[in-house]
Length: 139
Image 1: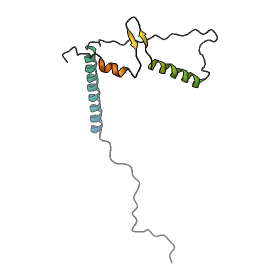
Image 2: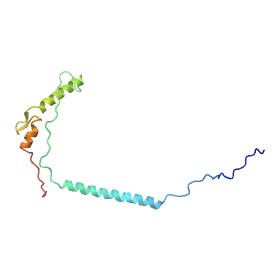
Image 3: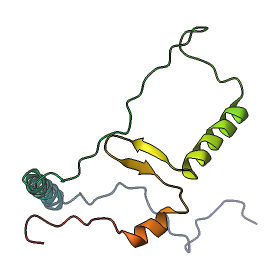
Image 4: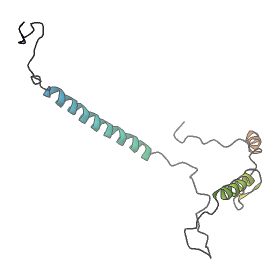
């Protein structure tokens, strides 16, 4: 018996080679050109939208804050004050919020703005609906 290994004719040996196709330069330049055109187009669309908003009249009911934030002077310790009991502070905060939600009170006495209980507010809105802002440009 012969111990030499003979090549098997059924096995195809292929030599290792590199990729012989190149990237298509025309496609790469076309994609880059399309992206550039789209970028410029988006730029002009956004400029047009912002120009449209710039020429619209401001709303008739501008927002004004309820109060300005003020620091309470602390005689015992300088700022920052540490929270000693978060659960107790949260409970006190919720109690204050519930008291405001379920009671009458003045928000601004000089302009006649009042606070009503939250259960009463829907009934008042059904009796006297809120005013509706009309469009100034013929809407």
